[in-house]
Length: 304
Image (cartoon, rainbow, N blue to C red):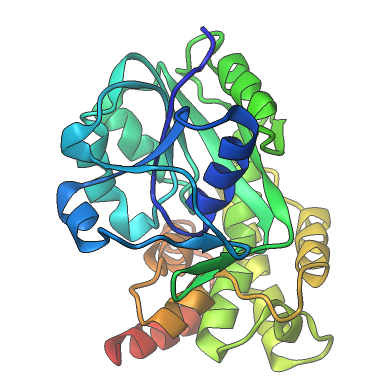
């Protein structure tokens, strides 16, 4: 079934990045942002910009929205509960669902509510979008990597891939998407948390021999150990590739948790070191760097 209507929940950096790309290629009216009514009222009149141009994708309150062919979740993990409520108005019998949330647990919660049949597993990686003060900028759009869950119906992945191709959204269909999700979690555990804890950037975290770089790599290596204990074949080559990816980004750029520190917003620390620590305990693995990062980030959040 060709996807002709798309609703994005989450008008942050990732949502605006892919929403604006899709609007340019699909034309007006195909893609829309949907917010719960309270959030819509709070942001009424705001027109964020994307690389200096006003965002052209329209935003609707949930009370005025209806079922669409594809729902893309692009909120932070801290907003998932509210996003699931908003989705009730958008999900019909043939609606496909793609979650771009960080971590490895959001699809399970989506499927608990809406089933696995139309849900695909996804990660967004490689982008350098920064959203501060109503202005979103980026130079690298990154890509969406996705694939079928064990319960995903035949044809759903193909339908989503066709939509991404028409929308001009860089994407890769993964044969083993669970492994890719753990590689992305490993990256986030390292770069997001290090930059948040130190107030750093992609450049400072990539500087060889620096304290930030040591923290970045050590946190990833602990996540790698936990992934392997979970039966996921994440390797040192994956770690090196992620470190190289970060080193190739704008050195002044900031991952999302570093932006949270500037914007004084709750972070996704529970999805990152929280997940690593919880699973490490079940396997008897020591993760001192992630324990330090968890405590440091929570300490910073208390001051918000």
